[in-house]
Image (tube, rainbow, N blue to C red; front, side, top):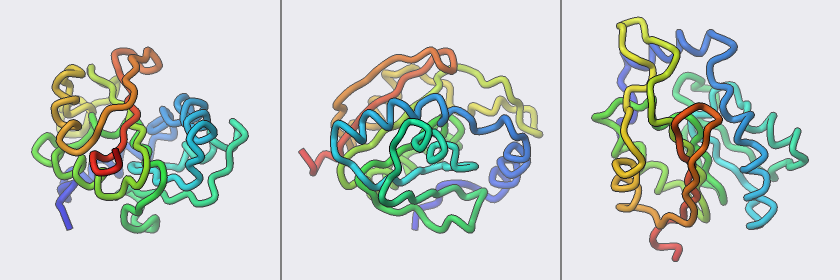
Length: 179
């Protein structure tokens, strides 16, 4: 199994998740994810970096109830390991990954994506600061940097800028072998 988070950083994330307003971006993206599910027939969802499972809450509000919802978040070990699904969502997570482990995380996303991936990335600083003084967005890179990371494993089907969280993008992808 690939290393995707260090123990020290996991402890910092546990502290951030005590804030009820940490990890709410999925609610904003749920209507888009619901539309993707309706248009593509994806019925199972793997929520990578699920936090408090806000994506599932938002999907239900949007009138979509996945046949299988598979949350994963190292802060919540009770969710278990990342699991494959028709649609893998990683919303407002990738910019929080430790830079030296981002390639491992993207590879893991590729390994669990059976049909499509929906990934949102904020490219600027976060409002939240870690206990060690670093910005909560450990990776603040432009879309061109991110695309270079993704094209090793995915075909980009759609890229959209978004202002939901300021300077960001969301992408819809499929694994290269699925083309």
